[in-house]
Length: 196
Image (cartoon, rainbow, N blue to C red; front, side, top):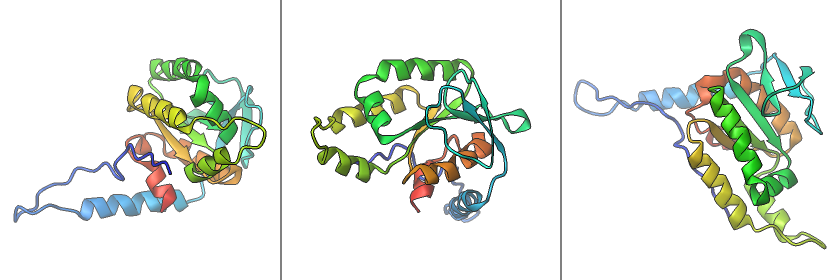
């Protein structure tokens, strides 16, 4: 079983109170705030890259060529936040052998002072089980795939985060929220809140 826990659950400064003790109310406040934000319905127009081969469906969307990533928002909702969606097969292919191409995409993201969520449409456990029961194909080396994931996470710390959803529908629900909340979530372990 693989566990990718590269972020703390909440990035919050904990202060000393008047008696010299720590104020943990801020941590609980942050947990409550993010939980409420993720349960809200977000009504925004999502821009979809023209090269996206299996675009997700959103209430409002527009197809447009993006410099990197598969999804973002436009106009006053744009927050330099992008999503690169990966099916489980695409994830295994990219992080199992096409990692240099992905690094170049992340470099473009950094050059434009942006942030990239890499949303994988399957849980880590499901990817692991699927790779064990591959029929007629050689199972991908998950240790190598997750080693590359961790390498990218460290190399581009502060500019990307990996999120594992349960399926396409779950991705359709979460992506507009990631894009809309933008910079408010850049230093938060979003997977922690998704899993709760």
